[in-house]
Length: 375
Image (cartoon, rainbow, N blue to C red; front, top):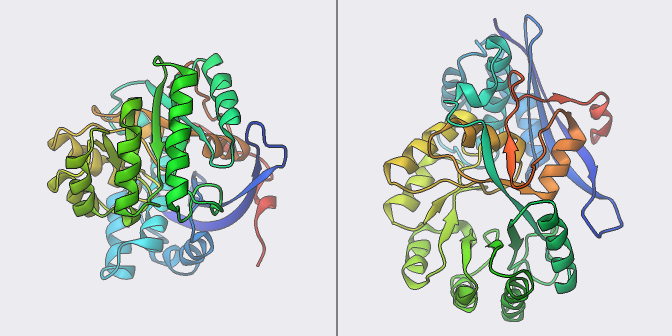
């Protein structure tokens, strides 16, 4: 079996958030790899550099991996590293290589007639989940309304975005000012007071805060019993994360988008900078890199939980490894997966049951390439 065709597309995918009337759209990098005997593997994610990643795959990656054995993802990643990125292995290269790896594991599962989570170790067939619901654009009243809808459906672990500033890009990312930090703390307090103590709450700054802002926010929310404060600092500096961890009682989580390689995750662990590791297969190196990250975290006795979106990919990692944890069902990534594929498993009362179908366990819907953005 050989890799016969590789193609990447940028799709403009419609989806909806609760209480928001207008349809949202996400630009998603979608990858398909086909073998010479007709097996197809898929991967997808949204990135800031979605066009660069797709172009890199189509112009350079495709030629390098043509004819290689799709059942040898380590060999493919090694070839991509030495031929295309032995000096720079972050950014677009890492995102592209991660998507390629995910698609190869999808092929591997289909070839062996096993779901990916079993091939990764098969530690469990169900994973606990949490829902990222707290958009910065929601008012306090809307936050409570959406949270209560989710709680009524059996989802009692909830995360909100903070530190996005007055005009966040794509709803989550921005430069917060001092007033934004105070308002974010008030939103956390409001949720705790209106939802009670039986709901688990987390918050995610998406790497938007300066150190002083992150420290101020952490101190203001300490009374409200958060499960974690995710990606509090700009560029997730491991040295500053360690300094912050020593100065707050709120557990710190990091390692999702932007980590790009286990060498960066290693720095969190060596510096004792995090309480929870959050490797995301979409840029840590796919499932191959995810296995390495899980083993590294286990060596330091640091638990795993998911961060960084796209549950339908990452659930396989957390079901596969012994130290797998909660899977993040971000309201955006959750709906995007459902818009693109048939057979994506939904969360039910705080849990997701892994598919038994081979590979990723879901298949692209007919006609999704009609969503491709044409240059």
